[in-house]
Length: 292
Image 1 (spheres, rainbow, N blue to C red):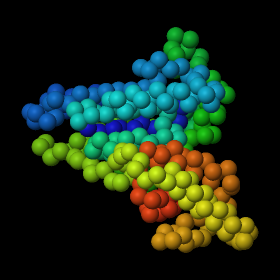
Image 2 (image 1 turned 30 degrees about the vertical axis):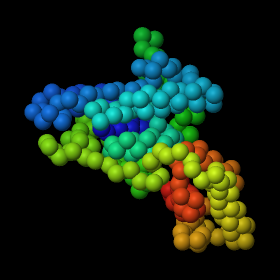
Image 3 (image 1 turned 60 degrees about the vertical axis):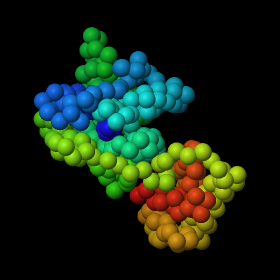
Image 4 (image 1 turned 45 degrees about the vertical axis):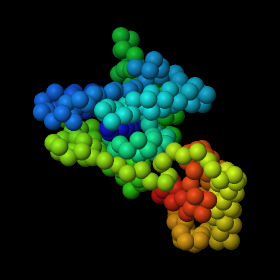
């Protein structure tokens, strides 16, 4: 059953909103006479439950290990009889995409709940948490500032961030009923998801698949970089690549940014055996989603 991804700035109230959702889901399950719903369980996953401290976000290595721990826990929990609430930073869009693919691969819907607390309010909350020695909820200032800087806000126009539910700070509670209806469905009307070629895990059968995955994505980056070099100062534009169009943003895209997107695409698709003929189109779509 569904994966509910919670995302937001540090100290934005993600766990508070997650607990509201968990309590609501449990109440709906307990009061339901539908056997399909009454057998469901709610699994809440966050840093505290996984035994992770705020300091894991100080270094790239420990942060990577923390994301791996969350990813493994979510993947183990996904199933036909569980509602998984992943209450973490989830601030990297590539990470959200990876979890979206895993949910779709097991035929379960997913959504993103964005805790929309403003930065200044998050800073105020974090300072209060740091001052309260009886609680372990604040982020050290350097980690807090760094996470704010690196946060990649969910975009409801992308596949992996939709449906997107934003919870303003002043709202008393999340749109629980809307999320339930979207993810679980009305009594007796189960939500189902049909996996597509990009999310069905299959063994690699074409011997040159990895070579083509690497070559095709690299060639597309080369075309983008050459176009930008030949059109200095021109903001945006549509660049035709085969049957697809790369939608370039107003500001030039740097080589490191393009390489990072390419690495994410390669990492996500090494075990997803796309048809070789569809690799270029898939990468263009991923590139557009990442640049959008």
